Length: 348
Image 1 (cartoon, rainbow, N blue to C red):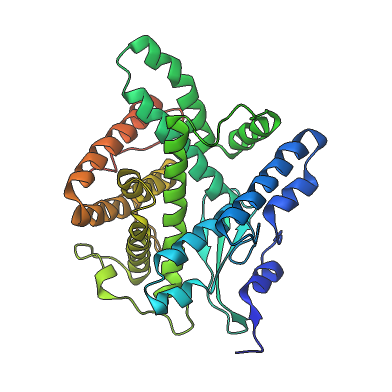
Image 2: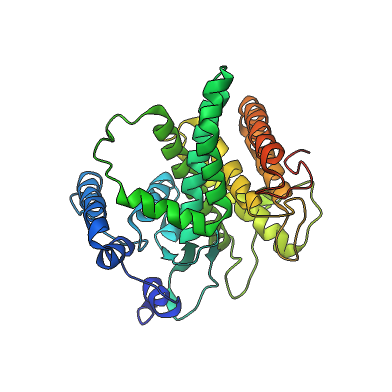
């Protein structure tokens, strides 16, 4: 064991465009107008690390991106009462990549390297940011009775939805955001919409990471392949072994996520996995259809909804109503322009 390289070295040697520190890499390649904003982000991360991590600042042990690093540390804290799982999670390394599609992957284990490698594309992180903002704004929109006031919010909702569909619009939106000054934002007392978006983003990122961790823990990535604990098997679906892996990883990620119940608002926490599936479905012409290796977004969504119902049936029913409203709004308003859903895939 002692002669093995760390999984971080594997990421840096095998993944095209890999960098050791994502935020510092962006700072080094930023233009003069952007450098101040990026340096401010790094300074805030350093301060956050000093407060939360024994004055160690931006220690990067589990990821090359600071936000993901913090989420992995949270998940490790969630399982500290489970010695086996605690040690397994301490062997995780997550490398952010430059790919634009919203995807993450648990890489097959390599005996030459110590630990489990996960890659997550920048397109996934950005997609989660935009879907979180979209959902928080839609919730605000849905509470307004005055039609003229509702209509004022539609352009922003449309812009966010277009960004979710089109990588070029997303990149342009991010570039414009970085050029703007954000000194007027009160990070200590953020407005409600920003706070809700932040919590959705955190829960969604944790679920994505938990799903990929699940592939490792359930030995889907091991050389001797499968070991699936029976509680992670969906009971009502007739699926292929590869599809079963995805359902099992979803269930594992969900169970890992709800261990953090005290940190995140429970309604938002339960919503987060469903919102991840909505993001993937927005990029999918046929969310109701499965592929050879992956179940349909519809089946994943309904399976997760069933998991939520097992924990809290009332919240599951409220979430089903809310996401039904959101998905219906997207489909009815933008079916021909942005998304091409031919069915109400989110309904049983």
